[in-house]
Structures are given as structure tokens and as C-alpha cells.
Length: 64
Length: 506
Image (spheres, each protein chain N blue to C red):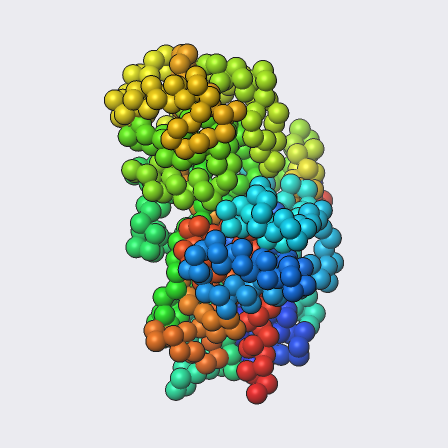
């Protein structure tokens, strides 16, 4: 599985605060960088939680 | 040059802009909303909590109006305040119409308006003005962010257009009336917009260091308060609020309205706060709410510390101190009190009855995280050397303060005796506290119809403003403004849309 962020993401940085292994706010590009190309099994639970915690449902887990 | 024609232009997609755009679209007005960022939402996207609405009954409206105006010593513009309060009843229905439910509603009975300090109210001196509607957020997300997303969807449903990555930079006038604007797309291409009316809802200027220095006297810094900085904004991270609307309005002769920073007391990072206000990494955030001894750089007390959980009062007082900073100081006995007996003030956002391992938390912040605003020392002299607090001044303060604690009466500020805890027994602990800005706001002078005024206070026809860029007029001095500003943004959005729609249909 991989992480996808929809374009209505508000770049609030909540995902980075909660799950720094998966996300980083990229201030230069005004974007959120996804730090893993494919979600490793040990981070899968955190990836699922990040989708549930996102303020605007912008984070999705999709098949790679 | 690309051209866009519409009836109403809205600049900014925060709560005020989207409320105005949706309200006008519901009236059948052709709306085009311009947002410089690639998505909807403004500063409020990260300030999720709640909004306030005054019941639409004359006695409630009168009492809320009187309370607010008296609080500002009539420094606020009464017509602007009345428009806000009298239209606030429309907010709950507007939000419900977006398909969003409230987490809870706290009602304020008539006799308690202006008479009871509502901790989360954030309006005059913390007094309740109306009923408080708490947004239902997703997961650990922000309630207002989902409102902005749903409002943007609603606007499209109603036939409105949204242009992202398109920054309005200046307005076009025909005689005395605004009839359009020039915008720049992300790629650099200019867009000429023709319209009948324009609503500026571009927010505050929390990300503009020059404006903050010029209009508030503060030195903008990062969330760690590095360098000589004396204000931090972790409430609206990266919202790119640089005063676009204010500068565009001033550029065509608009008057400068009241400006300031409304903010609370906050110990900077690292290791304490994150990118946004809803994450903390330890209990320091809760400690700084407590009503123990607060002093300034000279070692002098500056406030009745019972106010320590009144964010506006603390933020305003800290701003008035040398170097715009304060210190919370407590000793080993008070530390044990917080750990074993419990806290005197519960902070409802990060609730804890008791603190745990305060010394270990301080050690981690100092030695592992490298936080320069957290201190721990065996003696007062050592604490002064670490913090830079004037030792003679602090020693003098401690002599008198500890005497007040012993006799059970605070001769200086009449603090509640329950909060009089002496500072005697090492170790000694200190937190350096700055103003944590919610928003640098204001700048556009409006009247009760949200019409923008020129330097002679005449109406600039066709130009309206709502939200943080115009909210200065609600307080006269926004630095004493409440934290529940979303109520003003919604309400002014309605008012600006009402009058702009009438003007367009004339």
C-alpha cells in the first residue's frame, strides 16, 4: 500500500506532528512530503491512523 | 491578459470569505472566489474549537452589545459590533446547512451574559456573550478546516467559482467605485477581473514580520522564539497571512483600521509545542496555566496571577513587560503540590488533574531538547543567572510575596489566598513565557455594513471587508480581542454578503 494526499489537504502539519515517520511539511513547496514510497508493514497501523486523524480526510491508503 | 467577469469577487477562502461567498450565492449572485494557496481555508483551519452566537432576542442582543462595548470603553466601532452580534444567530444554521453537526453546545442564560467568566469564551475579559457551539472535528483534526472544505463544496454546488493559486494583488476603481481587481496566477500570468462588488476576506498578517514590527511593536520569530524574537504564532502555521488585503485596500486610499496581536501566554519550543496548537509533547503547557508566582525580567510581579488561565489578559500583560516576556516561578513544595495534590487550574484542551515527574520533564527539555526557555536551579541566584532575571529585584519580590503567602493576603494584587504559594524551597523552577499570537489582525476600516472606508471615513463603493482583516474595528485594540474570533468572521461574512448583494442588485 502507498499513501496518497488529496489536493484539498490544508498543509496543517498535524500528520507530521503525529506521524513524523510518514510525513514532513515541505514549506518551500507548500506541500506535505510522504516519506515512504510503499508503507512498510511496521508502519501500516500508523498510516491507517493518519488517514483517520486527518482534519479534512485528505490522506488515503491505496494499493501500490 | 486572461479576463474573468463576475458579479461578486471574494478575496480569501477562510471562514469569512467562504461564508460571504456562500451567502451571496444563495441569493443568486454570481460569485468568484480567489485564493492564493492551492486549497481552501484560512488561518482558522488550525484553530478548530468553537464559535459563539447570541440568541436572536432583543434582551440577549442588548446585553451582549452593552457588555462588549463597555469592555472596550467604546473604543470599538459600535455599528460594527452591533452588526456582528445581531447576525451571529445565523451561524449555527449556516454550519448545519453544510452537513456538519456540533460536538456540544454550551448555552449562556441571560443573567450570565457579561457576568460570568467563561473560560473558553474568550470574549470581553473572558466573559460569556452568547451560546458556544463546539465544532465536531474529524479524528485529531480541526473543526473549522472541515467547515471550510464543506463550504467550498457548497459554493460550487450553488454555481460559484473558486480560483486557487490566484492571488489578488490590487483593485481597479472606476471613479469612486471598485469595479475589479488584478490577480496573479502561480505561474506569474496576470488576470484581469471585472466585477460589481468585491469582498476582502484575506485574513490577518501573522506571517508578515515587517507589518508585525511596524503595527504591533513585536519581533516575529519561530516557534522556538530564537534570537531576539518576542512573539510566536503556532496557531496558524504556514497560513501565508501577509496582509495582502490590507495593502491592496490601503493602495486605493482605504483608511488604516485598528491593528494588533491577540494572543495568549506560551512557552516556546522545542520539545513543548508542535507545528499546530493541538499537539503538546509534555505537561509544560498545563504548568503555564497555573496561578503561582509570575514575574518579569526585573523580577517584579505584573499581574494578579489568578488571571493566569485568562489567555487574553496574560498575553496583553506579557506584551507590556520589558523584552515582552514573563516568567512562571515555583519551588519544590509547589512542584510536589502539583504532583501529589493536583493542579489549581485544569486546562481543558490538555487536561490533567496532576502533573507527573516534573523534574524529569524539565531535565528532558533542558538537556535533551535544548529548550532555552525552561530553567531549573538549586538557588535563586543560580536561577537568576540562568534566566537573566534581575536578582535584586526578584529577591525583593520573594521577600514580600512570601510574606503575603505566610499571612494569607496579597497586599499588592489581592490574589485569591488559595493560590498564594511561597517560593522558598530549592529546587527552583522557571518557565520563560512569551505572547503566543493567535492572529495579527485588523487593518481595514469598515462600517456596520462591512463597507470599506477611505481616509476621510467615506465609503469606497463596491468594496467590503470581513474577517480577521477587518476585525480590528470590533475591539478598537485587537490585542485585547477574544480568541473566539470565528464568530466575527462568520457574522461579518453574512453582513458583507447581504450588503454587497443589495449593491449589486441596485
